[in-house]
Image 1 (cartoon, rainbow, N blue to C red):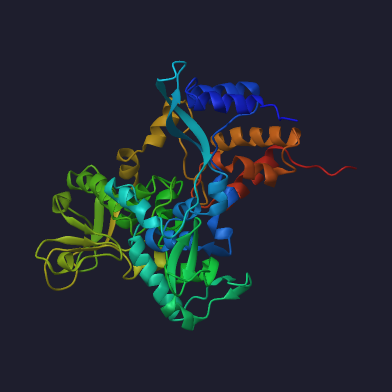
Image 2: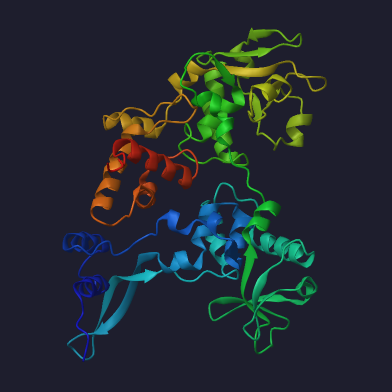
Length: 450
């Protein structure tokens, strides 16, 4: 018996035939109750940091681009569950046997499989359009060379299936003789291109070891903690203010090695200092705190923490050396921001600090404007140094309540996982889930029966 097409099948075919746009089809699917058609899996369902082993494309994405989002996008299961509309065209015969008609439509397809051999092909247009992650450190080809060198040195142990389908650790001594190929949309390792069967398939590498060797350098919450405190008065370290700007007041994840974002933050803050709109103080060579003349900062170079160039250090022009804020004790010693006005000798000024109220007054973000336009209270720092999103969380708590009452979530934790992608956050998804779970508990406390 032939299967009858469902309403969903009919809708998808109409888009394919060009009778409907993907947008119209999505609206109709929502109206009929089976939308969305195209879907992007929630990041919390495919968190690379919760996977003990990464595939070869995931590992290379990390080594080259140092971005968890990039790693996720090359996870096979994530790609299988990521459905998108893809433009398609073909010719069909018209009623006139000698004529043809071109049809332009869209097909709903899952993302294709990712392989290590395809990554360099993907990388080229991304690099040309400057769409690679700002945290990118290497090309994919360089990442492959580094990974194979570490495998051959025994610093990482990869597991795979051998020619007999058995799961084994690939011996260190084998790596100098193995070559990487793609066969049937999968990565394989062979000793010789003409080998009929690959020596190893389904290669996996330990996540923890990869992240130890190729480390990321995020802007940690404690680095912007002085700017996140509730009180507006006082002074904060220059570097902390710049990192606060890079993370848009803690709304997004920033990285210490993100040169583009660092330069943009410097371009926003330093001119305000040079014109006196943001007051800055420091300690002179005698160790005395004094207000500094903003004119000294006009056009000055500000070194990126941990990445200061030799040209900057050895040059003749004045420059500032920045150090990420850790805590008051470290800052009070030598781990603070220095200004060098002379090529040789010690810093002319140390312990550079900007007036916090001035920074908050002059530096705003698009999210602040959106909140104000929507009549929402701006997110303000709370007493713990974190940022309060009470207004936004209150909406999500009600969504959690509806999910629980509808039987779509068994409890607050499960409901929080369902809505966390919509939550504003300073750190990881896990911390946002915990925040939402607690907010739900405060609004709808569970009482023991008497």
